[in-house]
Length: 381
Image (cartoon, rainbow, N blue to C red; front, top):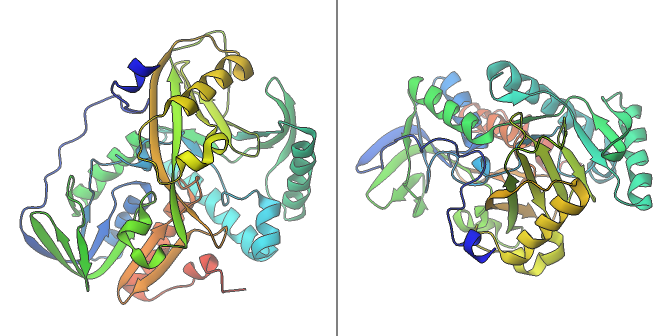
């Protein structure tokens, strides 16, 4: 275990070298600067290009180098909160509107990149009698609002089938989005951290970007780039491992279990990607660097052997930082200063809702159209 943790911690999705993008080394001027080249950042960039404005995107690391390219590869509709909990927290009308928007977003992703997305559905599997009762409450709430859901009983256990969900290769998608954004006219710079945002000028180590609007589109570490959100947002480490191909296992769709704390999927080539167990070591995982730790990795390996039943060798272990919002189940999607916007804090499931937020904030910044952003405003009862 110690040897493995000291080796390369690239995710299972890292199957090719990082594409080459320049570092910013001069002063440039654009209409909008987007900070963060992950899924939500690229959704924002593409929407801005469609709106006809000039865009520069920067990232402190590589394209998809943060949680966007290091997550479990799940495409889940709705918010991180289970649907009935979302209804209780923000109301039926708003919870249903967000859920339908995310179903549509998954559909758009699958249509745009069929080579990356598998629309196979997902499972929520109960790990206890109490969770089985909760699954039924979710089933009834979703049926009441005519949302796609089915009761499930199969090899994985009993729970729910969410047929509109899916799985994807998240890092490959980020790289394709980057390539298409550059072809569309966006200026992209990697290994270019934002050191400070002064008005709407973004200061970087070797240059600066003068913009009319700045959009911070990061998840983990959002509170560091946007100090206004300290106390409201806090980052945590999520950890995963992946096996070699296991022909003895058949897991046709992503699985969430134990209230969403544990999750896994099997890739088409037979490898298993497994994450979770953070809650068992919660104090150590808050504000932790994105590197695997021995206690969580041992717990994940026990889950792999005892719950999933796979004896395939573990080939990769990795981690990422994601942000959680303390005061609401809704993500951050708001203006934090004049002409400076922030999206993030997706509470662990940002692949789909982050793209919706990215599109919404692009329209709010450029057109003043905040209709979608109002869905994510906790004060908008």
